[in-house]
Image (cartoon, rainbow, N blue to C red; front, side, top):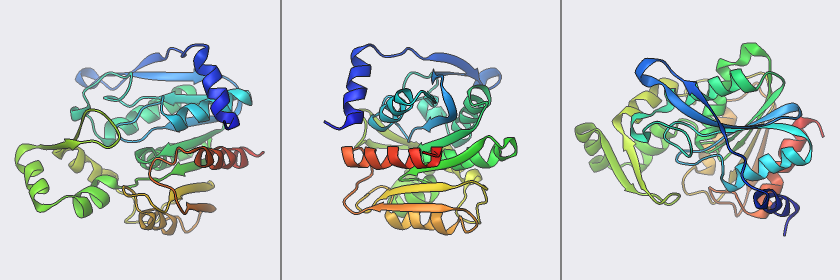
Length: 270
């Protein structure tokens, strides 16, 4: 058993830390967002989960235990419609999840912070890094299979058939069984339309901080070529691109986790 796996199992055996809840949004758009905060030294590690994922996933737990083992601050949260947070998934969109990430960052990341984003969390991390760039508190990004612009580039343009696009346009939604969750995988017209207001790959992205990208070459959901597009959209940044030859989208095997934690350590200055 890898060292991180043993520490995670020991931590879970002692009980799961209950999250605190913050209110995000205004009036009828207020959402109760679950946040898990472990205090410690800089830089704070802020975990941003993927689409239909939450802060209790394998990689998120490994990052949390990594921080605890080093007395390093770790912040995790669930987007609205995900995990322990309130809100209806079908009513949510990228704008909501970005607003929630901004609220968590503003409240709990008062010092130097590294953003760690998985899949959709990679897109949210980039948007957050741009919106909070003036704070000077974001010191780097570690992105795992970053699904930047996925609603448009990976779903609408590539994966969706004419029939699916027509269903979304006519019915406002389309659903199918998910490979990553028990419930149906629902895509709404609202999600697609809102995603178009946050597209990044049509321009150069300037963050002013180092970026590490970890990508599986065998990823069926976010192809390696998509991650390479992100590298090309960061021409002014210090980018480290690690391609895992036999890695899939989850990148949750022991060797994948070790690579992730090593990358976080290097960005933390170890």
